[in-house]
Amino acid sequence: MPRTLSVRPHAWALKEPFAISRGTRTHARVVIVEVHEAGKLGRGEAGGVAYHGETPESMAAQIEQVRAAVEAGCDRRQLADLLPAGGARHALDAALWDLEAKLTGMPVWQRAGVGKWAPIDSAVTIGMRDIDAYEAAAHAYDGYPWIKVKVGPGSPETAIQAVRRGAPRARLIVDANQSWSVEELCEYEPLLRPLGVDLLEQPVAAGADAGLVGYAGQIPLCADESLSTAADLPGLAGRYRFVNIKLDKVGGLTPALELAGAARAAGFRLMVGCMLGGSVSVAPGMVLAQLCEVCDLDGPWLQSEDWPGGMAYERGRMLPPSPELWG
Image (cartoon, rainbow, N blue to C red; front, side, top):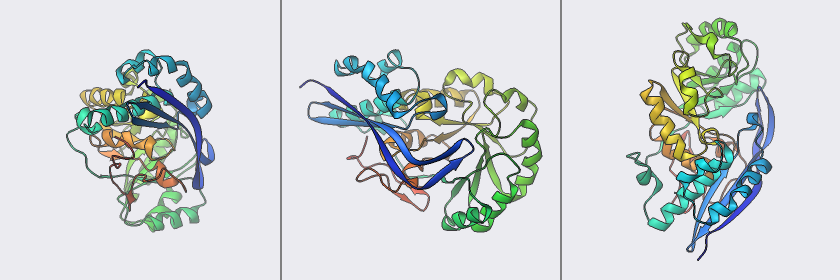
């Protein structure tokens, strides 16, 4: 039976508007890929990298350009020769991993060699909002192990104080999404230390990383927008302690596993993150999460709708996807 490929854009409604320093979204817009072969179905989904100009329509167009190669039987290792790093390649890579698992009967985590397939503690994200609303949102997540707090320009300590009042026990990630200068980072970081912040994610603009040389703050910095592929690692050395690997940026689980190995070898600690999207978009990230200290795979939790049988997320504890869903 010949292999067939289907591609479609989709939009998942969010529970509430999701605001970060770059803007506000009401839907998670994704591209969905399905590859059929020998009576089996492999699924992939990607939200893409909006700040690189990716949309569901642009990703679908990229995938259509390689339809002939995919339907002719290319494997996921050949995708790097067909597509650049980005959401289109992530969606196809995920579908081919899933198809391999279903055709061979070997789960993805075993084929990937990560050594375990266990639940993880995933951060839940609080988007930008009024100060009182930060506290109310955090109170709803009191008892969750990790909370990520989105902040924008300006001093963040009042927002983080409000989160602390609402969730006094949670470990905190503060994500400014590139909205601070290096000087502001040095000003704000001492104010956040007493509030028990564990990680500062991408406080300064990608491209301004050189200003972090000699940064003496105690809260570790994590590169997000500054990291897409392994080629970016040398420019992050001595500036960040963590790197956030996102499958949409690197182009799928296959290169993400390679990037994780290269980052560890270069002395970085690992975080796995996600873009907005449904459970199939983050399911491959659960494989990478087995290797990471910090996990942020809450995209489906922020939605009011998801795939049938989607990822279970129980008070900050995320369970591996069911075999029927992916992998």
